[in-house]
Length: 406
Image (cartoon, rainbow, N blue to C red; front, side, top):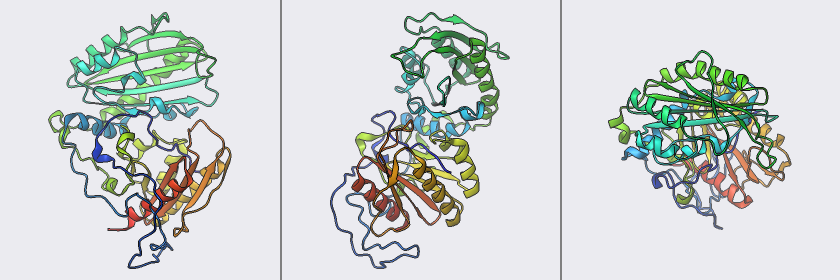
């Protein structure tokens, strides 16, 4: 069973408009195509994408700015950030608000209190990515964040300054991180907050300079500060070799990073300009797991299907090795969709019999929108989400056309 979190805007920001385009749902009639019925049964004369695109956009080009290049570098870095589920298999429940690409002047507050953003910006952040999970019983949490700076001195100074920032009125005390004497560790008892089940417990965080990188880990357990510190240490055990394997972009070349590193982001249904998200873009497979509902299961699906890239804007597209791989992903996506709380079949997409649509009548931790559709186009499997049924069907029609039409 394939499971994943629909990738929606977890941090609404003004990012690059070139990754987005104005696309609102309208009533419309499909345009008669030269060849009406495709090999996979799609009726191009019936497909109705509304006001969404009927074919691919032009190639997206380069970042053309260092600030945007920093975001794209964060997407690259995500492939070398250890997932909490690999640190502890119990850490599978998503924390979407703490899973995001860092910007030079925005985003740090999701993990670190003010003046954390000012400290990071003053040290000229070059890239960063954060990922987070809870255990299903909410007794354990882990946030992992890696920030890249121009040099080791900047990373070390940032670590010292961030570790001096208080945590509101909560008493904080120094605490050693096992096996990592160079890490600046501290711990505090997290108070219950409004009865939230994920609050309370013993929180330990570590700031570890590692060359030009700052490795940050925040762990909370119900057991003890020692248990939380042990989780931080295990995070470093896995993160250090991962980030050492990362090949960073020269700072002077950040503006030349391609906006479409996977080669088909221009064939993904674009988002509205006012719904830009730092997580929009193209990813390598492991990086994409940070946004999945059950990353361990999805990793298995990716391996079975030969997924080599994932791209997400308004919709999300997975590129498999071939059409059989895409069908494997679709079967798993359908199984996931039918397993969700309150899931029931929804009207399909006229002209696209291979697509399946669902309605979700109960909220869940994955923040699944009310309607979803999944389908395939050649070696690609895709998904669309919306709070409106007609909208999700038009997105789905558009996504099929964008992947198959020139």
